[in-house]
Length: 287
Image (cartoon, rainbow, N blue to C red):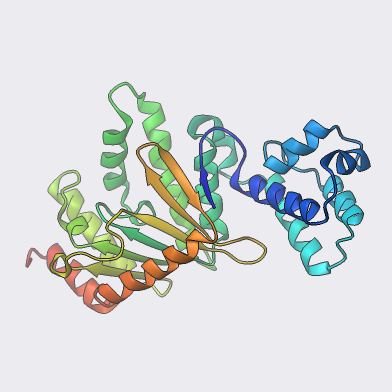
C-alpha cells in the first residue's frame, strides 16, 4: 500500500482507522450498525476509519467489544496505537509551520527499532552538521522564505538527531553513494566538517555507514533514495520516499520489495570499516 502525504490525518491515525475498518469489514458488519452502537453518525465513523478524525479511546474499546475482539494482544496493540494518535511530543506544535508530513517523520524516527537509509545525492538529515543542513535548507526554501522560517527548519532538523544519541539510541544504518562524499555543499571547511562528523558517527555502536563506490556501477536502487523504518509491534514496517510531488509512505506488500533492495545495497557497498576508511581519505584529501 502507498500513501501520499500532505495536509490531513497523521500516518498513525490512518493506521488505526484502517485496522478498525478491516475488523468491521471482516465481520461483515455494516458501517451504520457500528456507528449506531457507539452513538455516532455514519459520517463520523467513516471519518474515524479514514483517519481524518482520530478515534477516541472509549469508542475503540466499545467497538472492539461489539466486534467480539477478545485477544488481549490485539486489543492492547490497537489501544496502544490509539494512545499514540493522541500523544503529543516536541514536534506536534510545529504542525502548522511544517505540515503533517513533518510530524510523521520524527514520530517514525522516535519509534523505530532501526532505520535503514539509502542516500544517493547528499548526507542524510540525521547525520548532517548544522552548517551542511543550513546550506541545503536555504537552497530548497527559495528566496521568498522568511529567515525566521529557515531558522526553524534548521533547528528542528538538528533536534531530530537526538534519537541517535539518547540513552537508548535508535539503530541507524545508511548506504550512501560515493558521490555524496564529494558533492560540494557549502564552503570547503563546512564540507570537511561534514565528512569529519560522518566518520565519527560511523564509529558509534548504533550507527553503520556504508558507501557504494562509484566503480560499482548500476545497482538495485537506481530509482532514488528511501528510508525504511523497522517498527516494533503493533506498528507495521513502513518505507518513506520523497518525490518532486510530495512524500510517499509505502507499506506491505511493497515494503517487502524495498527490504530486498536494501539487502542488495548492503551487499554492493563497502563494509562499514572500509567505508569509514574511505570517508577519512576524502577528509584528508587523499581521494
